[in-house]
Length: 336
Length: 78
Image 1 (tube, rainbow over the protein chains, first blue to last red):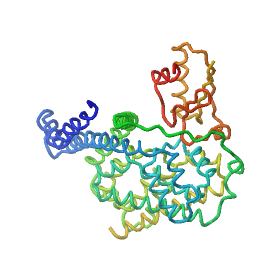
Image 2 (image 1 turned 135 degrees about the horizontal axis):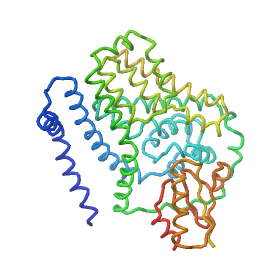
Image 3 (image 1 turned 180 degrees about the horizontal axis):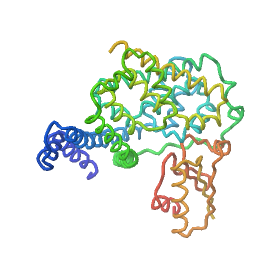
Image 4 (image 1 turned 90 degrees about the horizontal axis):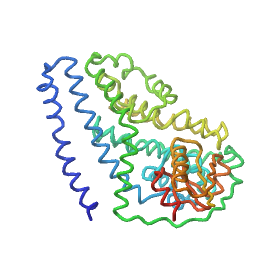
């Protein structure tokens, strides 16, 4: 019973602190440190002192919630749901399940093999593997915290769209012969074990554990990312980036994808910096394309995938996802 | 004599689980053989989807997460 009341109490405290952050940050910078408003240093500091706790608090709350939701899903259940699913409906389902199924990129290989072996079509498997890392809660929370809900929604829905479409195309191209031969020969001996049923108390524990694990890992990137962002915010002249990567420079979208793919960073480090680049004149579509390519396509991941995929399929996979990201980039530069 | 298997491809989580298991075995003093399985072909025989996995006597008890020493100890004693 005690664990049942605790979350509500914690939520009340959370709300109280969260909605007084701006006031507290200003009080600290302007009154306690006694800095003069309007200078570069003061504005950078105000930005930093406000944004870091804000983003961290959002992370704690939402990751806790997502952790509880995820405790109702598992890779095993998702596989069962996708077995034998074909074409479009399967791709949509796989992408949506990719968002809620607990996933770590280190499990990508066993997951891939397990899905293929159980008869989940190749294209449907890819939809899952694209959506799972791209639309992760850390990215969406940071976008919400630093850009607002509209951009977060745009990111999540276009990401979903790319995952569905790219998986569907890969399915249509019939590339099964580019999967390493041994994958199809594997026969699991292990029997299905019954899922353990969790009580609500245990689910709260799962939520708290995921907060500890994820926030414990990403907080340092957020502090550094927002720190760099704060420095740029206060010191780099307005619109400087506009000349460099402006709306008229058509090449800015493919260029940002090219830079983004080999860059291996997580959402926590990259999004705070991008948020400030936008403020300095980088167009939204270019920024979106950059973030997506950093988060969704990474060189280390492709090297791992080499163990189960032949080279042509890796290139096709990366090419289709990159093309999808560029289309999103061009589209948003054009309409916004 | 228990047979303990850690399935995982060498990621950070897998290494932590392996270390925690060694520590748990040491602390409980149970006689056990701890085997690390890092090869995917070998791993897939056990119907694994998320790594790391901890198996005690061919039964997977931890899936897709790291367990701390205390938790592994209770699993070993059971």
